[in-house]
Image 1 (cartoon, rainbow, N blue to C red):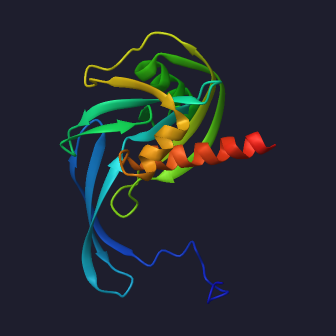
Image 2: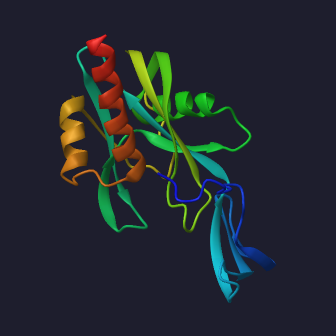
Length: 192
């Protein structure tokens, strides 16, 4: 229950005094804003703006298997198992980017696509918007990894991948959210 019936979700309590890009490359831009916070006090706010949308795909075959992609993640300094994912240019159709990512990383092509999630990855510091698709009716082709990717593929039951998300063997936020939503959607579909 909301305590204030007149609450306006569109009201921005922050006031930007100055804004300047501190760093940028082909993938990100880092901006520092001089602000007045919601209480009226001065402060700074750093924002990482992404130049791509985050795209994740949960491929599921007729037997209920999915594919995970394993790779060493430089920022974390550790190995990570994830759903197939990557970046799609902001101006490009999200589904087109999802099809490309699935083919590049797994070699899979899907005849049936369902968008199951729109999410923000870390909305206190970045404007990154992510989308997750369920990909079904799969056929196998060849992988086309990018030169920055040293990938391992793992085909396993979707239920096992969900268990990995639940016990923190999968920690990537898009992967965890996507796997849990996919499991729920497929279970609801199976119940009719």
